Structures are given as C-alpha cells and as structure tokens.
Length: 214
Image (cartoon, rainbow, N blue to C red; front, side, top):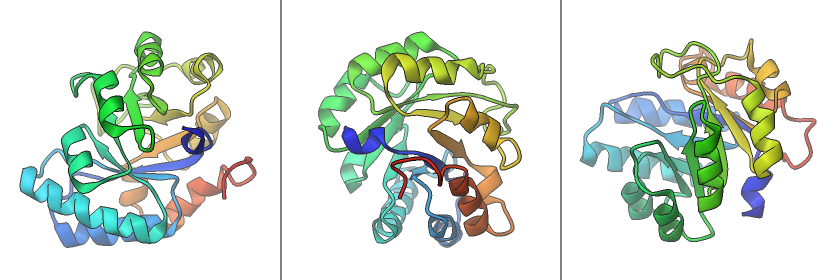
C-alpha cells in the first residue's frame, strides 16, 4: 500500500479511558496536533462501549484527515469501517486479516522484539511492523526490551514503515527516530500531557524535514 509506506510521524494510541466524552475530547486535542495515525485501544471498556467509542473517534478522525486504526479487533474495525487494524500475537491470523481488510486499509502487527514475527507479517502483507518496548513502559510492563538495531534492520529487510512503542516520551523520541522508526507510538506522554495538541505537534516536528510528510 503506497500511501502507508510513506507514513511517518506520531502514532497516537488512546489510553484506557471509560469516559466517552473525555476520550473524545482528548482525542480531538491530539488530532489537532496532526498525528500520522490514531489507534483506538481500550482494555477496560466492554464491547458496546468499545463500539460507541470507536465510532465516535472515527468521526473525529475523518474530520481531521487522520486514519483510525483499531487495536486487536478486526471485527470491530470492519464493523465501523475504520481505516485499519493492529494485531498482536493472539489476535488472529494475519493473512486472513489482510484478505478481510482488502488492499485499501491498513494492517499493522506487533512484533515485540522478534524479527521472525516481522518477517511473517511482511509475508502476510502487513503495512507496518511495530517493535517494543523501546524503554520501560507502564502500558506493557512485561514486554521484553527491543534493541534499537531492530528498527533499522527491519526497515532494510522489509521495506515497510517501522513503528516503535514502549516508554517513549518527547525527551527520548529523537533517538528512536534516528534509530530508524518511521512511526513513534505513544500513549501517556501525549494523552496525559497538559496540552495534548502541543505535545502531538512536538512529535510531528521531529519528522517535518522528512520527505512524504505533509
């Protein structure tokens, strides 16, 4: 997918927020900072609330011109017409997800610190591969550390955008980008910031000089 291969910038990931209005308000602020992608991830909400929240976020993303990715739930992504899905180790077969999404939507895969998983994802037709945790992470405290060298190695081997996640803040994001990350996935440092729009814009500024980023 040629458009996703040019994606670079902030990959904003929502927190476990059960307040629908608060989540929408926070997401609206983050979208004002023009992230490359927004991922809906909420491990605390039930199915009906997840659908309602995802649908509301899709409306906000459409207005902002930012693709919405659904975490771990292909059925939900297809149900609401989201722009793609991000799958972890136990979230279904990647090749089947690719077929269900078609060629026009985004499929991402969590690779942890495992280059073989990225290799399998590339063979199945994913649009980006994600590695982490890059640093200690409160979101995924048990995730094994991912060496920075994986980022450049995966980019060279697969020719796909490479996302980095786990403990990233604006203070350490530049070194992650320099190591080869095309997408920097962040939860708390953006959504819990005093000014989420400004924080999102700060991440975007790391990539402003890169070709292909509007």
